[in-house]
Image (cartoon, rainbow, N blue to C red):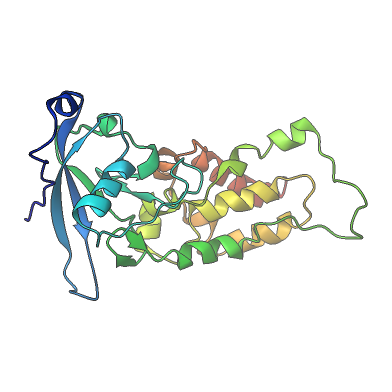
Length: 257
């Protein structure tokens, strides 16, 4: 297993070196895969000097910008909003931009690999199209009948609270790719799609709840959930994903929503 390292400048002033006293040495163990070079997956160790209060994303940036520019991963806002940097860190789905090095035991190698259940395109990048297709299939938008209103569609605070939790989804796929059912059957809609259906099924302004329920009543729909709570544990936004799935199941049985 190769171990690239970042060499220190021998001419660094002593004052600058003293400012590095708070840094620690850690090992990032990254799963590498480049189909243009080889079909084999490799694990590469990178030794870094980092502030323990920095994030895993900062460590990945350091690798890419200073050690190995071929490392490939997705990221955008770096503030836990875009959801693009979901990956498996020490065996758990997390956002790299929200995971502090000090919180994942930097004394041992920190393993970083792509989320499971989706085809890996290169290194930490997966093909998100099946995930987004399931999202599109549940019609994640407001559907109403009649003429377009001349003013906003008002809603009470109580009606809004009914689905407020599921509006927090950022489509990072952390919940869906933590699901054992999804790993074994890529046709399953997955927790994220059900959460986004929930957001509109229980919206008092929407009029397509029955349609969405019928979509999720499919053999690859909501009944495939085995209530393992992996999805709830993986959600970086704290959404009660399993609870939302159970509420959709209940709505299917009672047709009350």
